[in-house]
Length: 89
Image 1: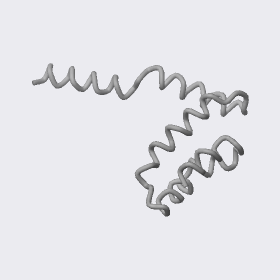
Image 2 (image 1 turned 90 degrees about the horizontal axis):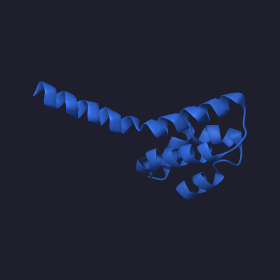
Image 3 (image 1 turned 45 degrees about the vertical axis):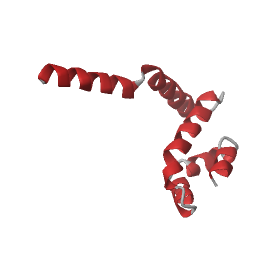
């Protein structure tokens, strides 16, 4: 199921929205693959960032995803947390 979902992603904007919604999550859960949901979302986001064109909203979302991936937000949060622990500890 996961391979089919990844293959179908990017073929049709309506399907993409369904695959990224709770419906896509339920499809994976029905196959006993709930643990694969975060991985699917990462692959889908990577595919979206590589696509050209799209509506104004899609282009804005793509720009936001690219900016967040460059910022490395999870890494920065960990660094701030570690610094705060050292300072308060």
